[in-house]
Length: 124
Image 1 (cartoon, rainbow, N blue to C red):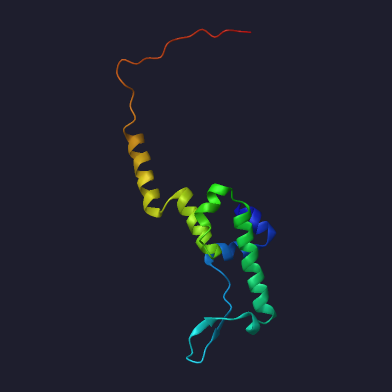
Image 2: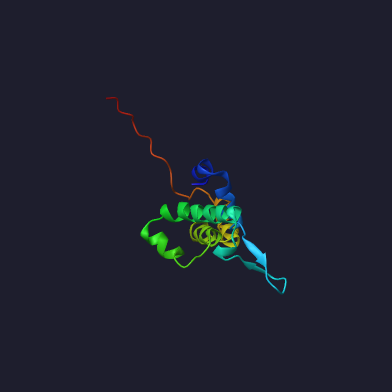
């Protein structure tokens, strides 16, 4: 998916992993607030278009079960993080899975009493 999205537009993958491109302005108190459509210039509208395009790429590739997991998400970053946790798990889960696999590998031994039978190969 990553390569496909990057192939379409390189900036889209940055939007998905880092968050939306901000279209902010300072209000009377000097606090950053999102711009309204009236306050947007051409560059801001291009940012909004990129954000929508990135979201479309993520949502259109999902089936109904996956879509139900992300339907409450509002940004592409939220969607991506939700899908990543659902499929790969949190970093803590990944570490515990790795530890489990490593311990299973270390404990791997041949059980006593088991042996391999010799079989004849048949030629056809």
